[in-house]
Structure formats: C-alpha cells, structure tokens
Image (cartoon, rainbow, N blue to C red; front, side, top):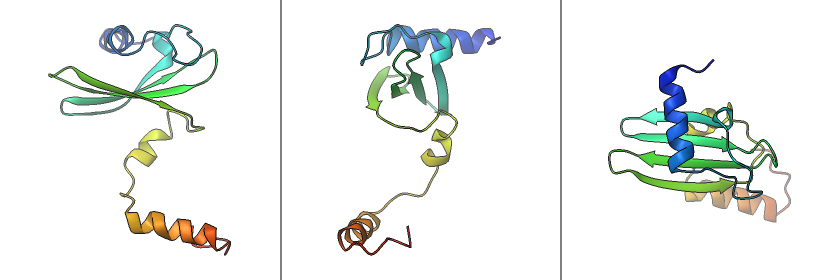
Amino acid sequence: MLNKSLRKQKRFFIDRIAKFCDKCGSPYHLSDVQVIQEKGSSTIIHFSCRNCKSSNVASLVSPMGFTTRIPLNSDLTVDEFPKFASGDIISLDDVLEVYICFEDSKGCVKI
C-alpha cells in the first residue's frame, strides 16, 4: 500500500502533468506513475499506460511549477531508467564514432 505522502505526490502528477495517455486516451492510475529521480527542486516522473503500454517521462521543476513531458517509445522499464540517467555524458565524438562504425559496416566490436 502506498504511503499517504507518495499517494498524494502521484495524484498531483496525474492531476497537473498527465491525466490521460497521449497515444490511446486511457486514464492514468496511481500505479502507472513512478518517481524516477528527485533532486532538489526537480523531479523526473515515468508514466506507463496500462492499456497500450506506451511510456512518458516528465520533469517537474518546483517552485516554479514548470513541467515538460516527453513521449518515449522505449523498451526500458522504469527500473532501468536510473541506470541510464546516471550514466556518463555522451560526447559528439562518441556519436560520430558509432556513426562511422555502422556506416563502414565494420561490425562495431567496440560498442
């Protein structure tokens, strides 16, 4: 059972950020919302649609109340997000190296 504070927080996210799935229009339920990360005044939230299985990630910056929501087509589970969110920054050189590797069809062993 959700504690009262977490339940209230999730209800706020549903009421203020996303009540319905953008893809199929199904309403979100408290169990569809997971808090991925909270740092200072910002929170990253993951919404999963139980009907069509689409995912959304939203960031909320308090006290300004500024939110952004980004639809994701991803096979990552909510448990996998922290691993990638805390990973190293990918440089432009890293992207270029991968691009060249695939373009040359070398097999990209380093990746």
